[in-house]
Length: 249
Image (cartoon, rainbow, N blue to C red; front, side, top):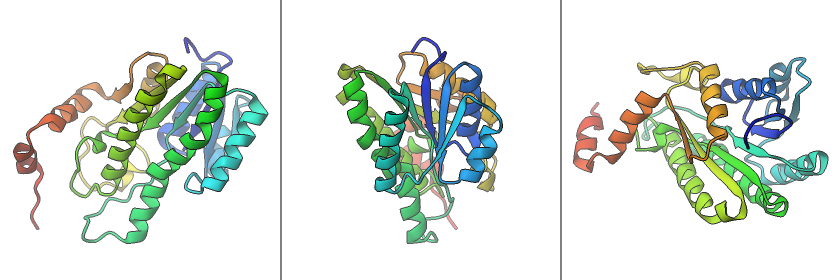
């Protein structure tokens, strides 16, 4: 894509935070935007009176619902230019105190929801000979972080999925991108009880994503300085990494 005029962009996970800000930003830039999440009421609040935004509510953790809605969207709109998967759950906790249900719920939405989406969208993109898939990971997926499980694990899995997908489908004209945000002021980060350096607003994050989707690069990461620091931590030898992050008590 060279611009967003008359493009059809489907943002899954757009009821708040970055996804909601991205939907508004792309609609201003001329795109027809479809927004999805589980909560219809929140989606309607994001849409407001914006005629360039359409609402479709469903649960990405339910593969039957995903297939139904993917079929519905492609039958209704004909072609889709880009699908951006932003849906995520987050519940910070130590591994020793988290519940099995919390872990399952996070993995079902953060990873399996993305996989469900890819599974049913790819045949349509292959048939139309083009399309863009952007998966929202996190710098938390670069390394396993204290109190970040299973969120960090789900995002690491999503990063690996995006890399594998790009290797497999780029020759088919399908563009795959990985979105790697640092700290963004959202309902998710509001759950954190620690200092979050270089935090940005959702609107700034949306601008970074909107600009990045139009480029040829694989990873869209922001803010630059913070994510660069996290990249350095990612390549640290294990003994240095564990010395930095091992916790007691």
